[in-house]
Image (cartoon, rainbow, N blue to C red; front, side, top):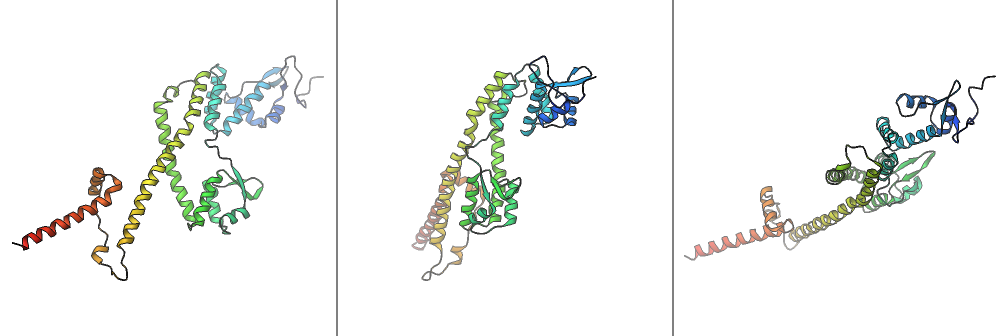
Length: 320
């Protein structure tokens, strides 16, 4: 009798590898029979061997399907996966390339994600559970849904959620917090894109647009590992510098306004209380001359000196 066309499991073989019918390969890999055939048509999967009148697959086909699934999860297109697999087939070192992919796609922070229930979320924000704000947080990725757990969320960055809770406790509305995060994210993504452009231009240019050998890919992965923290360290340092600069200026402006505010014994002078707007070019010129931090003090001193000069001119004229 001829062999059954659909055996229940791997076929025995004279080699050390197992052999599979396409249905068994689909079951082992998690891919559908239609997907396997589509991969063959696109050149992603080698053609099967033949055992009599039956097509047979082996462990190399299973490993290739697992590689494809892994790359798809990382966001690669089928076209780019085909190029990577072709590099492997031509002996250019897919192992190194996959190592580089893992390095780039890996976490760029040491922070550990967490979980939070709807009840805990409400308690964190002072008993206020705002479904619309939660929906916005899900859209922004501050919270992520957990399959099969409607009352619980994954928190990719507990630190970010904690910042939002502290701002809310300080009196900031939830809508304002999510709006600020959306705006901040756009600005930070711009910084990230500029940093990548910079490193591509000066560091990774020799790896771009060429087929990477296994050694080149490993070298590039090592560079990514070394340079990864630099962007965050630079942004943190510059943010600290900017906050110190603008916070001090903001405080001086508020103190100056408070000192000029009317009191019961000194009613307000409308002319003095009015805000005076100077041309932007003038303010920028003063900033270039004395530094941005000293612009208000310089303008105040210049105005005071002009007033005194005019008083002296008037006194000298009246004395003639």
